Amino acid sequence: MITNIINNKPTKLFIFLNGFFIANAFITEVIGVKIFSLESTLGISPIKIPLFGNEFSFSLTAGVLLWPVVFIMTDIINEYYGERGVKFLSYLTVGLLAYAFFMYFIAIKLVPADWWIGSKAEQGVPNMQSAYAQIFGQGIAIILGSLVAFLIGQVVDVVIFHKIKKWSGEKYIWLRATGSTLVSQLIDSFVVLIIAFYLYPKYINDANGPAWAFARVMTICVGNYIYKFIVAVLLTPVIYIVHNWIEKYLGHDLATEMKQAALKE
Image 1 (tube, one colour):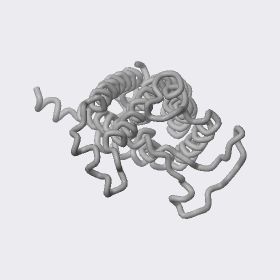
Image 2 (spheres, helix red, strand yellow):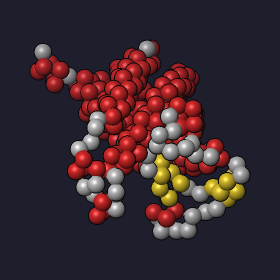
Image 3 (cartoon, one colour):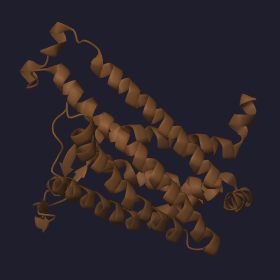
């Protein structure tokens, strides 16, 4: 049984894509609590543009660093495994993220050892329990926002992707990949951050600090989406390269058969 699975190229590819996608989803949830300055990271002065009554600059969630990987993985699964493949991955990812949500909550509630609380005071962290709760507690808010945004975004993505593919056939890979992503990520970029940094702390639990000003959340949403928009366009050549790699791995006939089957899902 296991030999058949290992020797089956479409199955191996599906397992790899799912595993890599889910790993990146979890990493994104953990590192997404940090907001970084893109301009300062690149060594340039932050732009300062009035927006929503706030000052706009490219203050992004660290989770966007892995977004290019998610973008390419989603496109490949859409292309070769169809709507059922994407839905399977979406439901599996949401289930595992919900499990992580539960375990974060349990871990925060565990009573810390007395000596551990002040163990990093000399490194500038006077209370390790508070720091732990701040990071993983905020992570809970991000996971909650991500669960909602991910499901909505993935459904929108797969619907638009396959509508474009049914119209264009095998042509215009860039259009269906980039077009579906730009629409779905418009939803994702706003929903996840509004829930995580505004709605969750304001209406559910403010133990990790009060809700951010709505204007600030909106400016970060805009910055994240602009970043994703630019990256999606720049990654167009990479999409074709990855498709060529996969076609070589699967073989032309098998790859064509899988894409045609995916279109009928």
